[in-house]
Image 1 (cartoon, helix red, strand yellow):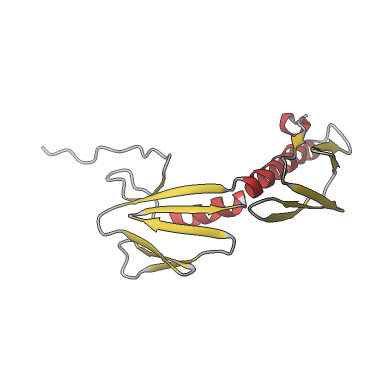
Image 2: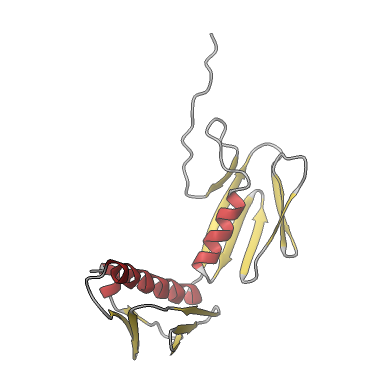
Length: 178
């Protein structure tokens, strides 16, 4: 049984939810998200409530999908109403970041500059080595942020590299002088 799947999701005012077969379209003030939900879960939209009903209970795969689908729909509703934001902090001497057009330009201590294409639907700002990624799709925001962070993960001795704004880097002591 899924605790997340059992909960009904309330559709806020100004948000429009449509179902076409297995595809759900959610429109809100910030934009539109479309996602397909195939499988053994029935999604019912009644007034301002969305409920999820498994076709056969007791199956582990169906129970896993039950909560997953509910979580996806909830994230879509939050995304089209409020949006999602993730912040990265770039630490290190000589490390720079700036946005020009639809590319993120990074100087990470390599022999070449790193240029990353910004996907459509995301807005990226870079000010004083603080990079802010925002958009309506939670998965896209998280994926792009993780992709940027993977170019220079924080190291434990000096803390150089990308870290999330709420991430704490455990520091190591290093060599001791005799």
